[in-house]
Picture 1: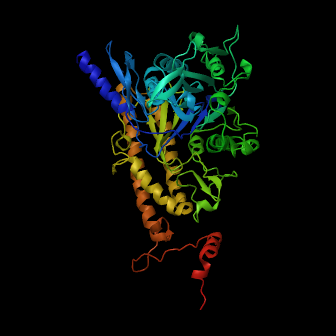
Picture 2: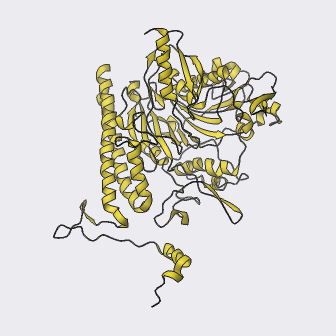
Picture 3: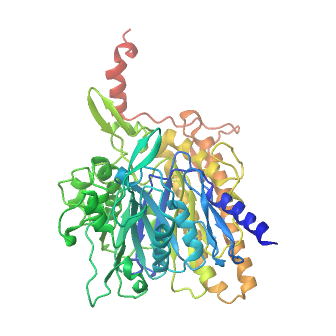
Length: 585
């Protein structure tokens, strides 16, 4: 293939890889260091939540490129063409958001000061940053260097972002926001009003390593407040001027050298350097930033540490209450199944429990259709924004297992589509070279139904469950737990079996296992779909005995159960409509 044709092929590939219109600007990430987990795995989670995002598993095969190859970038949210940059000589295999070296990256958008992103500028978007970096970096530290280097060289065009960056040994959080000059709009176009001395459009940022043994999280609200500044004789914290020292194991914090001075020039900060807070400066707290965002992190913290109740007042929106810390130490070691379940949350057990108020309806459905805000009689109200939400396109638990020697089988992306509460996390090896059909890109879309796509099967089941939630979710959870527990057991069995294989045999087995797991999941979820329809048709609940629906002596269906509504619901009906429906004669 000549260079011109090769360049064209790369551009077409990247169009497919990056040109996926989505707006996952309401996501949730949880971070778990090796010292906080039972088996020593490092893990991050990601729920990509958007009403227009289709759930599929992105794949980028490892490849070699001749000198001079260019890659066209497309904005992940919109599919808009950006610009070309040089391709590297070799890219790594990437399955979803994990690569062959067990580097995993997730994100949540916090927005932040509009002055930092509202004016359009040339630059790389956050989605391209993630997938370019996964193809180019082996470790979390290398990922930070590449991501910040790309925005330094090419600019940054997205809103404020929090990134979770994980490898088998370390977990980091990187927060970034655009660094704009001031602009006016003249005849519908931005015209520079003021260029700050020594600055060009790019980004300011801070990255912190989560201490081993601790957990963290972010959910659309900037989380890094104050951070240690570099000092002579210490590598604990470094500025971007000393990025050559980032690979030093002592480094726990790295930041853009102008992150404070830029804020000073813009008039957003005038205190001492050591008092500077990234979050308070670039993403000041609001009620929605706390209640709709940090509250999700609080919910996770509350489930892994019994001493978190003191932060509930803050989580409910009080900016004067004690602020949620960036990380906490859990009171027990956490395994992968618990991490999956931590992604399943509607604030149960807190004052915000979505199953308890009248909005849940008679069947305790913990979902509220959008919009999230509403006004009534001159007062404004909200619906809770929980970790589990109906508009999730896909979610994952990335498990980076440093104790497995063969890296292609060490990293696992536990991948699921649709609502985290009702999904099934299916194991995808980081060394896959074939994506199972049900997760494959192009198998259906948000406007095209596919019988073989997991996204549509899971949405069909979940949307039916919403109609009689408290009863139907129990049946779903039985299937969910059985499959996930089985996958976890089988994975452990294959860890020992696969270590004895040569490279070719191993590749075949990795592809076969993930494909067969996905196929089994689809078969069992199809059975669940049929079972739920038969059992709960028309608001009735069929009787069962020993796993079979009851029938009469003549083979007809036994008369079904017809459970009553709860008393409080009857009372509301009577209060609203009792004069019309009361028996009077």
